[in-house]
Image: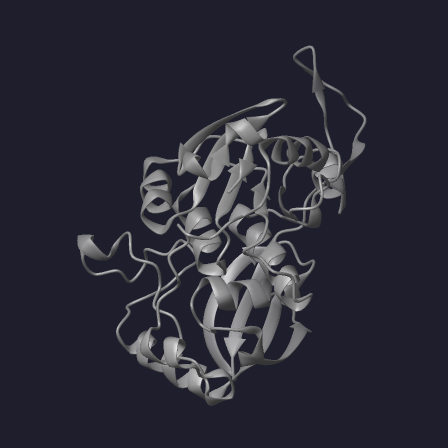
Length: 291
């Protein structure tokens, strides 16, 4: 949004004000079946994508079939995101909330033991509509070690470089992060979403992929930020075996990536990157193709 500001140059504040663009950040309250769940500070764009991605990466739903409806309501205090989910998922969420003192997208609030820190959030049980023998016996995300991303290092680097030029909010305000996805047959980033919060941007991209019925497990997620714990957590919960960040990862992010089977890259810039977990996905004899 436009704002009048005073600029300082050569250690002198100019008397005349100038127009500047500021990223919008406002409270977004997420409700499930009419019950408040969380309040996020987010950029009020692509909020339906955000809601879908948040539902999946927080383990609230198991599949897009469990999300029945979405509406958003503008209020004087912020935005209400009304999400309707299946009765089975709602009952699971109620049971889970009873065991938690609090919960945010960081994935740690409400955790009661050190042993639970690196666990992924529990996942809603499958509904009768898509219950199978395998899903009925397990409510945890699959191990990603055996999954093939099918993306080369050259593709990743090309897509990350292109992403820098496709962030209009960041170019205008300098205050937002972006997330994107690259398909195995492409070198161009797709489903680019921006937000003041890096985890919100990633949720938006994941949600957009879900809404478009894209195979998230065949491709890679890109983020224009550091790779912190919750970013790896969200990639793993979405079933994506490859996450590339433009900045550094944290130790907790690396540990979780190794544990869940996510190939984690940091400092993905220009023609360089550092691989911190599961580098065996890339076969250098095949010019870095992810196996």
